Amino acid sequence: MSSVAVVPGSFDPITLGHIDVIERAATLFDELHVVVVHNPDKHALIPIAHRVALIEKSLEERGLTAGNIVINSWSVGLLVDYCTDVGASAIVKGIRSQVDVAYETPMAIVNRNLAGVETIFLLPDPAHAHVSSSLVRQVSALGGDVAPYVPKAVAEFLKHTTD
Ligand code: PNS
Image 1 (tube, helix red, strand yellow):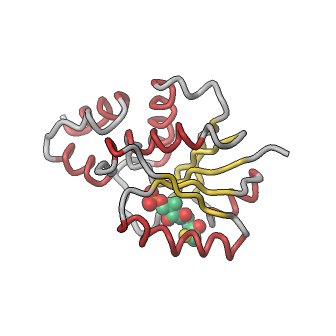
Image 2 (cartoon, protein in one colour):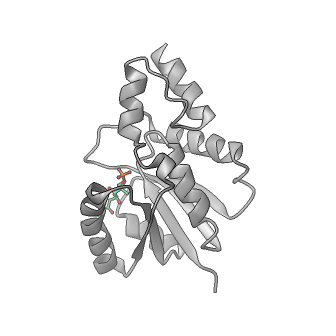
């Protein structure tokens, strides 16, 4: 039986920190779904379809699209419903700090209670430990250079949206 996992997130936008987690998670499972999930607690900058397109371009940049990675979006229900649909037994998340542990722990427990889906936490490359989508959005909105934190496709997209 093949192992399937899901890397969910708002990805608003995808950062080099996300790419790092995706790249490493893809080596641990036969199939890895990177899924843009609507987070009702967050006001999104980029429409979901565009976030998916940016993930596709970003993974292409890294030569990761020809392998075992599937890119998708999910906005109609629980994340665990998506996991059940694709036969995923695990969710993979990156953990940068104690703040992330506090944020992710309740979701991991609820997802396990709802559908028996386990959450696996990966520690990021320290080079990306300070990078977040919200920081990228803020720096970009104020005219700063986000190139060190995001894939080229995202840097270009943000440059055009703020020009
Ligand atoms: O990148 P984010 O915003 O931290 O990702 C959080 C996300 C979207 C993965 C989380 O909010 C989520 O899973 N939402 C889907 C709704 C759901 O299943 N909620 C119940 C379990 S947390």
